[in-house]
Image 1 (tube, helix red, strand yellow):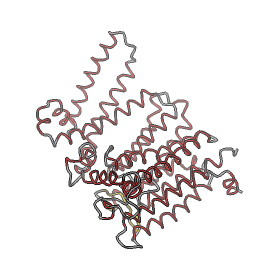
Image 2: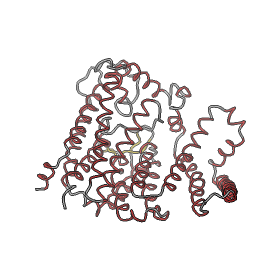
Image 3: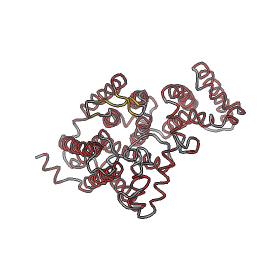
Image 4: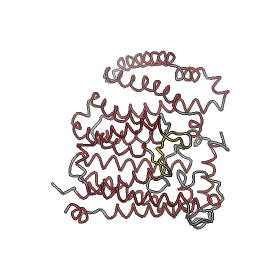
Length: 443
């Protein structure tokens, strides 16, 4: 009976958009790894992942999503255990110890941890959305996002950790959190990751770094805990002086909010910079910076962006034709079947083909947000919104990355790039959206 109701109220637009993205993804994965061979282990593994994904998606559709209100926290803690175990027993791939390997098959727990993370946050927001205007109500949500980010950075996998932050912020915004707190967290993130990357960038321009006393001071403050504490105290003193000056000028500013925000932004930033400097390797920072100036390291960290831009630009409006892309078929573009598969589409099918892929993702995200609005309860609404934001930010970061306007973070394009873990996780997420949609009028 449950499956009959699902079929009757099924979101066919969302489902067939997903199917088209998967089919196109398999097609271009074949093109990216095509070297005169019809059968490839990569291609066949993706097909197996599609089959597994459809099976798990059907389960995600069939089970009433409200059961995850009861077991969501358990799934979240289980995902944390997997993220912890992979640090000790995981397989290292491309410099990150992010994979459990079982013979010829492997899976990446960080990909599967995103859905339990959304479960846990949705459960909390449903129960506490009327108190989210209070600062103390942010403590549990902060722990919910901080723990997986810390474990994922330990691998290190910066891209998978980074994508949790915008999902978290959007869900808090929907849950009623004050703008001041969200802006503080946003500034926190900008400074936290901006300062070490700025220092890395300036390390290629020694004359600027040496001549700037301020930058030298920041560099010292973010490289040792004692200098970090001094840096915090100096900044807090400066902010206190600014606060009293503003009071004298008759600005209405609450002292507690001002100091809490200041400590959150400045104190947290320095401590996070220390963690980031410890966890992120030098080559990873260079990869993140390459989008600003690929010529910093044209044969290393900047090589991907340079070749991706060449592939996209050479495709023109209609492209060079399937299996006829020179950058793709001659192997100039690294990771072309995973992170940079959009470059393959743009080169072989041009602006028109890439636009088709973007339009399909727009439909998926639009339908997800519509499902969030129409959900029968707060939990379903938060859950659908979190999943929709996951697809949105994955797409934005990946597409921006291959176009050279965002840092290289190693994030795949969900449902499209090669990668069994990412594909199966995305299909389960689509199954949950279909589940929420089909039960929106069930009581």
